[in-house]
Image (cartoon, rainbow, N blue to C red; front, side, top):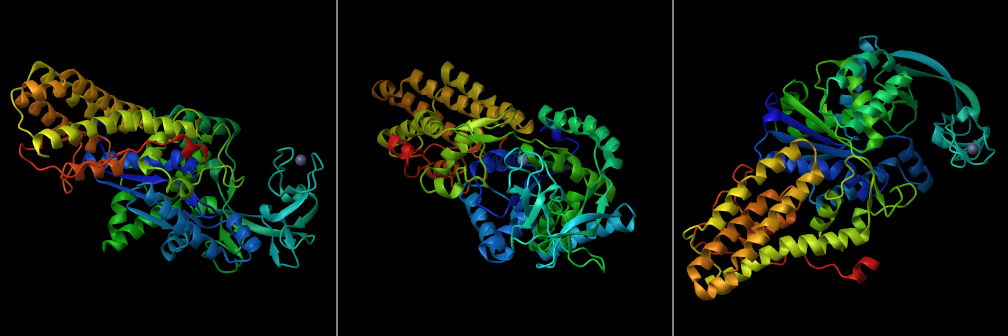
Length: 553
Ligand SMILES: [Zn+2]
């Protein structure tokens, strides 16, 4: 908590999900789950924190999918926006708002942003040659063109790259170019685009990133690599119909390029959040103030946008807070190969959510999070984590405790008698966990937070074994009561400590403890809040065993 001293509030974003397909576990591991864990921890620790995310809904890929499927882009984004929103909900993601970029609020916010830079003469126009389809009466963005690769001769190379030899291409380099929609041959025509002077901001960006000693090395090194090559000015408009139109006359058919407009979505979605609460101007407290800690969670493929392009845009605009940190994750691959929506090689949330406990999925991902290098998701690993850790350690402790309380103490909390040395040592040791785990969360070390949380349960299990309540119940029932009282208090501690990782189980634990409305705080995690005589709720199974047959499917 000490680290947040100079900040009054925290604003957390997860990379917007591109709304042309279902969300998969790669997204969850990269940008969604770490943010949700961080935010859940921050709320318990008492910070003023908001968490915004949503669907990224414009761009060529969506327009092209729509044309191919014979439906409108709006139909595509409506479908995937709702589907992904539901998938995240089912995995317990606790956004304050999950909205989208096709709203009027976003359109206006993005246009105002553009106008701000335009009015300050920061943008410049440049004319360039582009392929134009006479038949469709429009310019063809790179993904709308195929042709023969000039490098290897592959006949259906895409306008942006050849999938056969991997060369980066521009549509004009293709031999025998064709429109992917109509198949006709386009002509070359001039088109004028606005450019953002990114090169001008390189020094300022470099200085800014160099002032961030706590950023992850993978992020800093990535940026420094780009600085070495030299940043290039970038076009911020495109000839497309599906996008935010330019707020200028005489520029029909041009929209703001999605790389420029999408991150502004974080701002417009925050505006929506507060408008829905009846306080339209409150978004400014978060975005237009230097005592906000802005944290962007994302996968490594998004570093360039969040650590360079977006900050440069904000520097140009002025008056908006820059990120305090960009804790990007590497990729979580699937049994050895990268998860990819376009290649269909991925585990989609919708396919696993009905089959497995959402907390088990969260735990398997969190304990193997690709924080510093790529990791792999294995089905056998999900099974092992569920059975050998969640079930055998956490579930087992909770189950044993509740069985004792039910069987020997009529389902009530027994009184806490005189404490033995072993009790005092345990309680003392338990007290040291919350601040240690907190410091992992505050430093974006999610794997460490998970393993330390589980260590706490291991210690609790050892206490249970060492105190042998099954013997005590026969020899000294009062002593047994003290042990079970302590174990029940620990179950309440787990409900707090595991809320960021296992929110559904945490709720279940509170139900079992008959404390459903308990206001939990991180600082009060180890308080002995359960009073003697308190009637407990019904015991439930926290984690069902995952059988081999379920994994084979
Ligand atoms: Zn090629």
